[in-house]
Length: 347
Ligand code: SAH
Ligand code: SF4
Image (cartoon, rainbow, N blue to C red; front, side, top):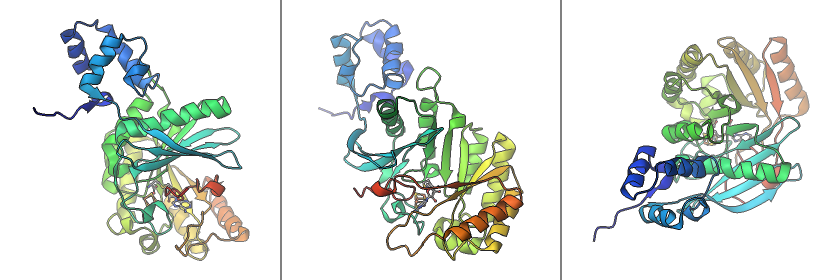
């Protein structure tokens, strides 16, 4: 007998569920109930769908499968940051982080298992890329972090950032599909203006975002406004030069009217001089933007270190004097390796 691989229930189109309900003599409102279980109540098994008859649950289980993420480990930092290690159905691990601050509760999630890019300063970049995450695996991270937010902080998530493992724009379709579900008005209903996708800079895909008229925010991991320096830190810059990125970002702004965030990690003696600041200021004059200066979280063996406070303060004030909208992002959850660029399934 031919063995057919079962589809994951969340990949099944509503129309196909409708046909199934007809075939097995179930009322059509069951489809709506199933959609609610999947995208509002975040069920992770057929048996959890308690307002469906046992018979209908069995019929579903016969045809479809469920491949939810499971929580493998949870760690809480002394600053309140919570890191979760998730396990996929095929036994790989990814990480997501819940970051409380005075006015926000931010979830940071992964888009790939590992990363194929090899940014020199990043712990994830040292791992192999295993595979892209599926849209429902991306969604599950948010759903689970939402549950933890309510349990630990009695609050819902206020913001979502794709700044965990992986390069979101190299998993374009599934990232966009997951955001569709996360923002679905009848489901989780998060506003796209609260979501930020961070990219190391894939010009073609940035243009695609523009053509798709996305409503979420885009952040570019810049780290140097100079090709030579940027290429040394980020090999992706060899094939996606600053000129190409800038052109793609101009187009993105033209189509979406959404300002860009530039992420800039300061590395001592590498990109923290007055000339580096001047290059950054010039770039910021093109389209409406802001700069997040990120404190570097040391990763062993990279050779990069963060500059001392006087250098940081000087860089910030140079930007401010030139009317750049700049914020310094201190790192969180360092004691549990939960900070940006430290996610590597270590502990
Ligand atoms: N791949 C995407 C998103 C994941 S990385 C990207 O590169 O943008 C998320 C952010 O963490 C990026 O801005 C990245 O440059 C930054 N980052 C990587 N390693 C870091 C480290 N060790 N310390 C601080 N930030 C780091
Ligand atoms: Fe990948 Fe982003 Fe890390 Fe670069 S910084 S290796 S793109 S996860």
